[in-house]
Image (cartoon, rainbow, N blue to C red; front, top):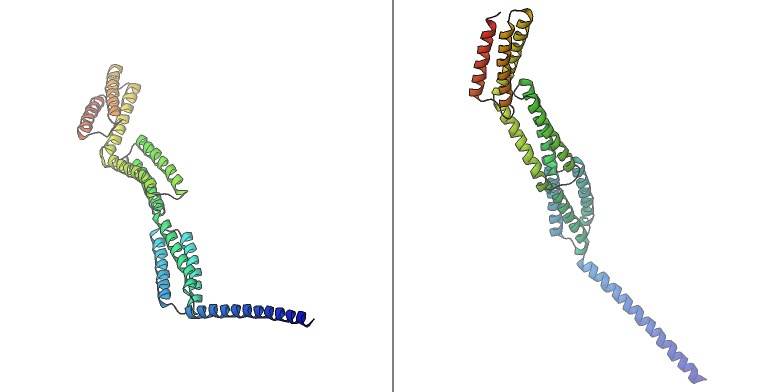
Amino acid sequence: MKAIDYLKYLKGGHFKKKILLIAIVLGMTTVLVQCDLVYHSQRWPENERKTEDRMFLLQQTIGNGLGSGELTPNEAQTFLIKLDNLRRDYTVLRERKTTQKEWDPIITKLEELDGEIKKVRAYPSRIDETQFSDRMFLLQQTIGNGLGSGELTPNESQAFLTKLDNLRRDYTVLRERKTTQKEWDPLIATLNELEEEVKKVRAYPSRIDETRLEDWMIVLQRKIDDGMLIGRLPRVRGREFQLRLDEVRREFLQRIKDQPLTSDEKGEISGRLDTLESDINNFW
């Protein structure tokens, strides 16, 4: 009986020793981990300096993008909010001792924000939208002014406005989504060509002279009609004058169909109309 009790005693003591040993190991592990954290927790001046510089540069980048039109006000506001959140996280880290591992997330987020801003600014559509819209508006004004001054005929104005409307539709498609420079290049080239075309046509002073020639032919037509109506112009001569006027008008319209009149053509038509008018006036 005593032997059995002794064995039970030994077994119970051995178990207690195991429990005690495990507790000691766990306690030492905890102490070692805490010591390791205390040892590695410190101030990181280099991280602080780099983070401050990075945030300052990002703020400048956002401001420059907003000023240049590469960022919209909404985009700039979104980026500034993200930057403010990162600045608050940075302030928390700066006020206490930390480990390098605690700095890793904020550094990563700053890099991601920098990449996001660069990606948005890389899209030239933000600038091109504004510039393209302004150029189309000015071109429409130019066409209207040319029509009003007589430098553009109604047909020319209508043709130019049709081309401008086609450009406006293409512009609207691009504006509704993010684009690359390559997608804008054909549209910009077409707008450049249209601007040059309108400028070239308006540069010919003959457009004003063409309008005057047309008005001159209208006046002569009325003289022929009125002269025959009131009897001052004999019918034979009236028909002769009408044929001469019709011939001049037909050649005039044919010549201005594709391009403005040259100085020689303008002089020739003016001379023929002047002669016709003198002949008609002989009967008045």
